[in-house]
Image (cartoon, rainbow, N blue to C red; front, side):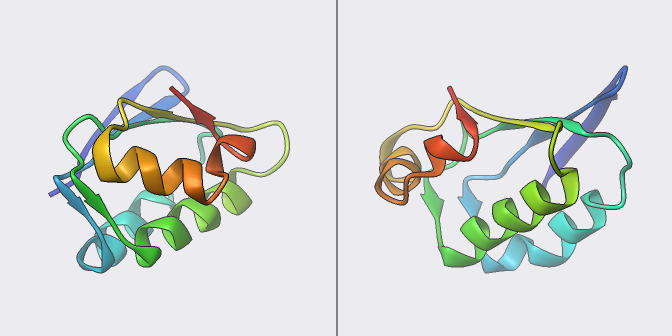
Length: 94
């Protein structure tokens, strides 16, 4: 289950241990928020798949130029996948 909170104009998202195709519907609901600043906490994520990467790209497109998406706490397989796919060029990977 994805945890969501809003602080001012920023959406904070806490992702589950498996950020994969099973999260698609829930993640799509997040994208109805109008905010353009997002912080995604990946500290609990042990596994990501191509569906998760696709969700991040769709969010990036929705946020648009001038928006901000930070991916925090990525480690292990999740961090390896983000770096292997060069997501640090499109997102603020911390």
